[in-house]
Length: 416
Image (cartoon, rainbow, N blue to C red; front, top):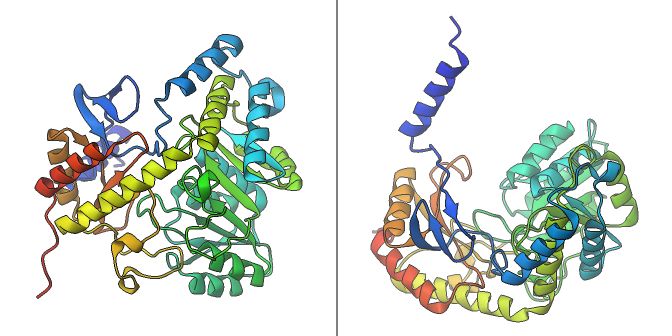
């Protein structure tokens, strides 16, 4: 007899609990800055994507509040009906101007952007060539499109070139993250773009974790490049989010006129979704203005990243996960972990789910919120603490985290 839905789901949940894969939402009271209250406990937040510290910025919040008083709490319809407000249009113009691209187009979320864009651009008979560690939204977009998907080894431009060469006769679309969200490493964008050009493939880069941080704020595809003297050609499709470095919510795609107009017609996640509230767009505009003007935020952030990595090195705590850098080099080819291009995402790979959970709980007892990331978000056997640093942290807080990590994380056993 087929079990009831409730009975089936209860067994599935119990199995997750047994494997230490059950996930719980924490309740945050108040703002989502560095000092937060989680489930009634005051602590320092070291696991958000608020890289420039703008999510709790009073100026950004006031821009949202002022816009809400003027435009209300919602847009009321999709962009193609009556939901496209002046605040949305102005934000799109500002983003396009900042990136030096002809047009930009807003989406409600980064997930919606990636799924809608890929599904609109390719379909049956076409081929998507994708990094093995691409974000779930890129994976789901490829599945939904119906295109053939060919996966290449993570950050391996040679493998990407082979997969592009083996693609069928339809359109080819090379899709990659710029900064990978769980490892913090950089895609080898120059080599990938070269391979794509060699095979007449279109290119799409999700720069969610690079925009606002790298390239002087303009992202991983803009100068100054993460790897010296390695120019990154502009991808055909550039996607980034507004809920990380910008401190608001939503996402956007930037590209040429034809791309944007085509997506307005064919991206189902845009056509059939209510537009984001105008107040959110106003907050993003304020965050973008800070992002453009406050170079000190990035400078301070990079100082903290270097400080954290140096402290981990002194403690014998490995920060990596077997990652590659933007030139495609493995850690074994680098003299020191400090030579790795710096991003705010610093993974401490502990291996087992139990070890990652135990370390996360021990850190919370000491007043530091650092999430344990487990499969299927990361590959089996690579459960980790995902430490993220922001411009709102200070050196004393980073040093405090390092001291707590020294108590909670065991360095790897020396090789005999």
